[in-house]
Image (cartoon, rainbow, N blue to C red):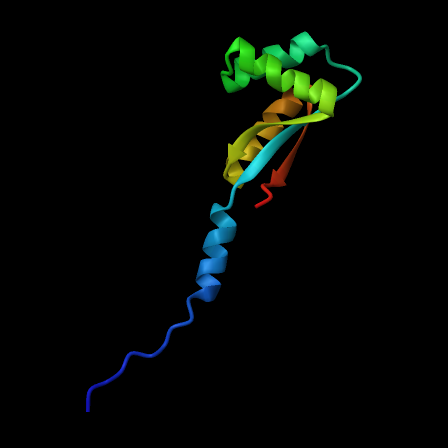
Length: 98
């Protein structure tokens, strides 16, 4: 009699894999301390945004109170948040809404 393969429950492995690979964001928040020109400079120097993109993101921070400046793995976004804090900006790590 041929042996049959047992059903393997991979849903748990898939859930863990999805959680590890799901996208996270770095959000920079408006603050009463930093000049708009400084925020744009940080975006250009750290993220490598061109002048126009840095200005656009800085204006989002200023006008909307926040801007998402990076998207990636949790570990990458943790590094970006720490770097923003080193520059004196308020930043947080958030799971991307899907």
